[in-house]
Length: 138
Image (cartoon, rainbow, N blue to C red; front, side, top):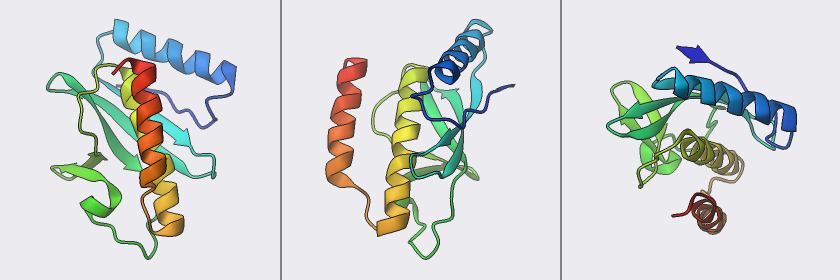
Protein backbone atom coordinates (compact mmCIF):
# COMPACT_ATOMS: atom_id res chain seq x y z
CA UNK A 1 0.00 0.00 0.00
CA UNK A 2 1.29 3.48 -0.84
CA UNK A 3 1.64 5.72 2.20
CA UNK A 4 2.06 9.47 2.29
CA UNK A 5 1.78 11.66 5.35
CA UNK A 6 0.85 15.31 4.97
CA UNK A 7 1.08 17.28 8.20
CA UNK A 8 1.13 20.78 6.78
CA UNK A 9 -1.64 23.08 5.76
CA UNK A 10 -2.61 23.05 2.10
CA UNK A 11 -1.31 26.63 1.71
CA UNK A 12 2.24 25.22 1.58
CA UNK A 13 2.64 24.91 -2.19
CA UNK A 14 5.58 22.50 -2.09
CA UNK A 15 3.78 20.03 0.11
CA UNK A 16 0.61 20.30 -1.97
CA UNK A 17 2.54 19.59 -5.16
CA UNK A 18 4.33 16.65 -3.53
CA UNK A 19 1.03 15.22 -2.27
CA UNK A 20 -0.73 15.67 -5.61
CA UNK A 21 2.15 14.00 -7.46
CA UNK A 22 2.03 11.10 -5.00
CA UNK A 23 -1.71 10.69 -5.50
CA UNK A 24 -1.32 10.86 -9.27
CA UNK A 25 1.30 8.09 -9.02
CA UNK A 26 -1.03 6.02 -6.84
CA UNK A 27 -3.80 6.35 -9.41
CA UNK A 28 -1.49 5.43 -12.28
CA UNK A 29 -0.36 2.37 -10.30
CA UNK A 30 -4.06 1.36 -9.91
CA UNK A 31 -3.88 1.45 -6.14
CA UNK A 32 -7.19 1.52 -4.32
CA UNK A 33 -5.95 2.66 -0.91
CA UNK A 34 -3.92 5.70 0.16
CA UNK A 35 -3.02 6.96 3.65
CA UNK A 36 -2.79 10.65 4.44
CA UNK A 37 -2.34 12.71 7.57
CA UNK A 38 -3.98 16.08 8.09
CA UNK A 39 -3.14 18.88 10.50
CA UNK A 40 -6.11 21.15 11.21
CA UNK A 41 -5.78 24.92 11.67
CA UNK A 42 -6.20 24.21 15.43
CA UNK A 43 -3.11 21.98 15.37
CA UNK A 44 -4.89 18.64 15.77
CA UNK A 45 -3.56 15.63 13.85
CA UNK A 46 -5.77 13.26 11.91
CA UNK A 47 -4.91 10.27 9.76
CA UNK A 48 -7.15 8.83 7.06
CA UNK A 49 -7.03 5.89 4.72
CA UNK A 50 -8.81 6.66 1.46
CA UNK A 51 -10.18 3.49 -0.11
CA UNK A 52 -12.13 2.85 -3.25
CA UNK A 53 -15.22 0.86 -2.19
CA UNK A 54 -18.14 -0.10 -4.47
CA UNK A 55 -17.32 2.55 -7.07
CA UNK A 56 -16.81 5.45 -4.65
CA UNK A 57 -14.02 6.72 -2.39
CA UNK A 58 -14.38 6.42 1.38
CA UNK A 59 -12.35 8.19 4.10
CA UNK A 60 -11.60 5.75 6.91
CA UNK A 61 -10.57 7.47 10.14
CA UNK A 62 -7.36 5.95 11.46
CA UNK A 63 -6.48 8.61 14.03
CA UNK A 64 -8.22 11.62 15.56
CA UNK A 65 -8.00 13.57 18.82
CA UNK A 66 -9.86 12.31 21.86
CA UNK A 67 -13.50 13.34 22.10
CA UNK A 68 -12.76 13.91 25.80
CA UNK A 69 -16.09 14.24 27.64
CA UNK A 70 -18.17 14.65 24.44
CA UNK A 71 -20.58 12.01 23.14
CA UNK A 72 -18.73 9.48 20.99
CA UNK A 73 -21.63 7.88 19.14
CA UNK A 74 -21.88 7.65 15.37
CA UNK A 75 -24.61 10.30 15.10
CA UNK A 76 -22.86 12.86 17.31
CA UNK A 77 -19.49 12.42 15.60
CA UNK A 78 -20.78 12.03 12.02
CA UNK A 79 -19.14 8.64 11.46
CA UNK A 80 -20.27 5.41 9.87
CA UNK A 81 -18.94 1.98 10.82
CA UNK A 82 -17.79 -0.86 8.60
CA UNK A 83 -16.72 -3.85 10.67
CA UNK A 84 -14.40 -2.42 13.31
CA UNK A 85 -13.47 0.66 11.25
CA UNK A 86 -15.01 4.13 11.33
CA UNK A 87 -15.32 6.31 8.26
CA UNK A 88 -16.50 9.83 7.48
CA UNK A 89 -20.26 10.27 7.09
CA UNK A 90 -21.08 11.69 3.65
CA UNK A 91 -24.27 11.33 1.62
CA UNK A 92 -23.00 11.46 -1.98
CA UNK A 93 -20.62 9.32 -4.02
CA UNK A 94 -17.05 10.62 -3.98
CA UNK A 95 -15.61 9.96 -7.41
CA UNK A 96 -12.08 11.29 -7.05
CA UNK A 97 -9.31 11.43 -4.50
CA UNK A 98 -9.61 15.22 -4.46
CA UNK A 99 -13.26 14.92 -3.42
CA UNK A 100 -12.66 12.38 -0.64
CA UNK A 101 -9.69 14.37 0.64
CA UNK A 102 -11.76 17.58 0.78
CA UNK A 103 -14.56 15.81 2.66
CA UNK A 104 -12.12 14.23 5.14
CA UNK A 105 -10.41 17.56 5.84
CA UNK A 106 -13.79 19.25 6.27
CA UNK A 107 -14.87 16.51 8.71
CA UNK A 108 -11.64 16.99 10.69
CA UNK A 109 -12.24 20.74 11.04
CA UNK A 110 -15.85 20.12 12.10
CA UNK A 111 -14.66 17.50 14.59
CA UNK A 112 -12.27 20.06 16.11
CA UNK A 113 -15.23 22.40 16.59
CA UNK A 114 -17.35 19.61 18.08
CA UNK A 115 -14.63 18.67 20.58
CA UNK A 116 -14.15 22.26 21.72
CA UNK A 117 -17.82 23.39 21.77
CA UNK A 118 -19.97 20.25 21.88
CA UNK A 119 -21.77 21.30 18.69
CA UNK A 120 -21.31 20.24 15.11
CA UNK A 121 -20.98 23.47 13.09
CA UNK A 122 -24.16 23.28 11.01
CA UNK A 123 -24.12 26.78 9.48
CA UNK A 124 -20.43 26.49 8.72
CA UNK A 125 -20.94 22.98 7.40
CA UNK A 126 -23.59 24.13 4.93
CA UNK A 127 -21.49 26.97 3.54
CA UNK A 128 -18.37 24.78 3.32
CA UNK A 129 -20.32 22.02 1.61
CA UNK A 130 -21.79 24.54 -0.84
CA UNK A 131 -18.30 25.89 -1.62
CA UNK A 132 -16.94 22.34 -1.92
CA UNK A 133 -19.75 21.34 -4.28
CA UNK A 134 -19.13 24.44 -6.41
CA UNK A 135 -15.44 23.58 -6.68
CA UNK A 136 -16.04 20.00 -7.81
CA UNK A 137 -19.05 20.86 -9.97
CA UNK A 138 -21.94 19.29 -8.04
